[in-house]
Length: 249
Image (cartoon, rainbow, N blue to C red; front, side, top):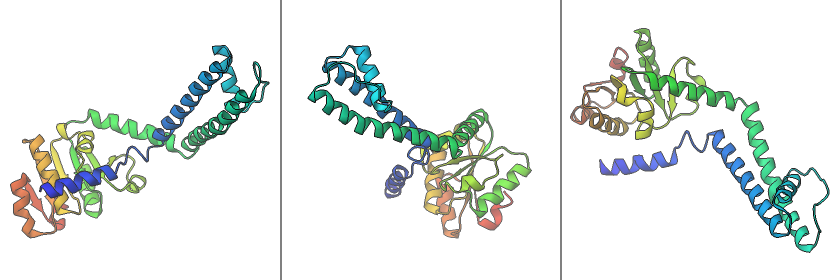
């Protein structure tokens, strides 16, 4: 189990669905770098003899490539510093602008608002079902649960699932073995956890984690291996079924 925990931790570090792929992360990086350029440029021009306000103004018109005349006496140091500022500052400004345009015109802004709205919906849920895994079995479970009027929050690591999923179904893209992802799905307020992951080892790990945090939680686990049933029950599963049986859960 310790070995599996280590492997799961490594995978969680490598699979960060909400950070590196988040366009707002790149926007924040770009804005931060642009702010740094403006600060360095202003300080540099101040050191070259300009008044603070003039230094800020000169930095802005240089980075934006507006092309107004230089302020103050232009000597060799001034020219070198301005040249470097143009190279690094303009590149940073173009990168930030490009990320903003990409975010706005490729629908990513709407997607981020949708995700945030979805997260707020999840935070208001109580007594819902957390479903880990949205493969063929998971989809069948989700349909049955929603047909019976249950609120369902789906966790799946496949980002492509996000484009295929019913827009009315609440989805978190991430690893079910990640404690933070389980928390985001509202595990602390859920009444039932259904594990339909492809890996029995992952199902076992999540069962142990959930049972430790929620002794009162009802846990249903799917398995393809009849020999795994005993281990899953000892880990805390209330019900262990095969893919043919779980559709009626």
